[in-house]
Image (cartoon, rainbow, N blue to C red; front, side):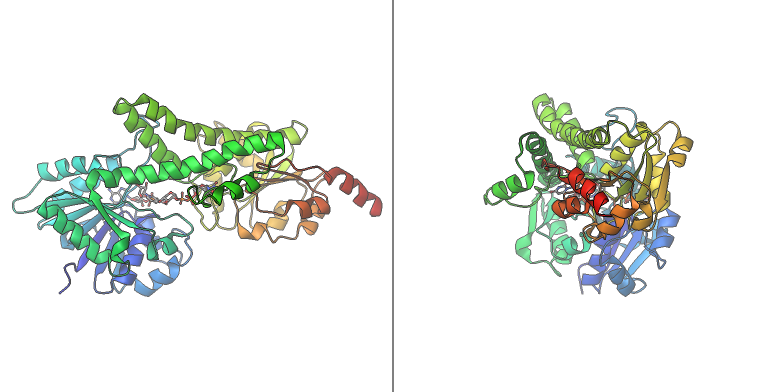
Length: 480
Ligand code: NAD
Ligand code: UDX
């Protein structure tokens, strides 16, 4: 029979949910159970409205759920039965204590290790799917061994996840590579082989990379650090472009054609967001400091600093262009998610932009096609944004129709690159707005020349637009 009949995954989040759904789809003979402490999340996974939006996910869940894919709060049963247990819980930045604001908080991972040790009565392969600091596997092993029952042995593998939100299913079905780190002992190698058997059901062997545990753990942090670094690099150049008349899109194209540099991930923007880049960079910075490598720590810290600078620079530009005051002005925010095709708002640059505008006394009409109204309100009334949540609630309005959101506003601020913002009827929108009407394109997605012809003042990232806007809008008034 197959070497594996049952898998358990602890953590039914953005990673656990999609990853296990694809394993269930590709390994029909394996029973996959995802468990979570959150009853609400599990009941959402078992309902018609899944807790996360990801293109293609719903189809897979509907196909496999109840057959070989199960969502449950009964961790005990699932852990006891499984031969492989994935740990896919959140590893947020610590908010207090040692390493506050930088170190990864491993309390949930440690909690999983204790849970497994308390329940397991047979040998288990424990897979670190969560992103963790280098050497985390050692801590997990210590917890498991210290609570060991007789005859129960554990192998720990590092198997970091590289999916990006919005394209998770695509990334999982056709990954650039799968990385598995394990011990160089016969037992470790056997565990690696077992996990390989799962992935090899749909991923060719050449794409499955095996390394030692520490290389695997560090590679995850390194990949995210390098990706984020590219964005901060191009964003730093966008400031140079705005000051000189160079166009960052042209610069990006020109350098991206160098095969050594490559063309992806060179899109200048309002700044990167998402639950991973900042958290993992901070984690890396903290590790470097602990290892007494301050120069290395400072190097990666700059990637975060540049991102903060970019978000603030964009917000400042909005305020400056609106005659240096947005107090009592109503502005439209187009897009709140941290990128398109997701409803996720963790570390979204839209929060920073909204905060800066609210601090200046602006009123905001916010529209996003996928983010829940309650999420936007929760984000903008959190203690990180304001100490006066009631005031914020009075200053924001959330819309479900973008055309309603622009009525009587001075400006549109594009914070997320949703496709629908490209194709909207900007003639109609222009007519609904207060003049002069401004559009700030934080994602470089709309046709700036066309919008200027409509009458908008258009301001974007990494390109100084000449400003026929004012003349044209005067012209269009005299035509009426
Ligand atoms: P998430 O917050 O969406 O999901 C984590 C889930 O784990 C939550 O539902 C939580 O209730 C549950 N949980 C926490 N402790 C638990 C416990 N002891 N027992 C049972 N359930 C528990 O997080 P996520 O975005 O899925 O990220 C998970 C990990 O994967 C993180 O380490 C993250 O860095 C990493 N990662 C995330 C992404 C991404 O795009 N989101 C990509 C690659 C890697
Ligand atoms: C990232 C990594 O890509 C993924 O491999 C890892 O597993 C998790 O972290 P994610 O954060 O989901 O994935 O999305 P990603 O596509 O990397 O975008 C992150 C942020 O960078 C978004 O806010 C996005 O808009 C921004 N970005 C991306 C840019 O501003 N410019 C770019 O060229 C690319």
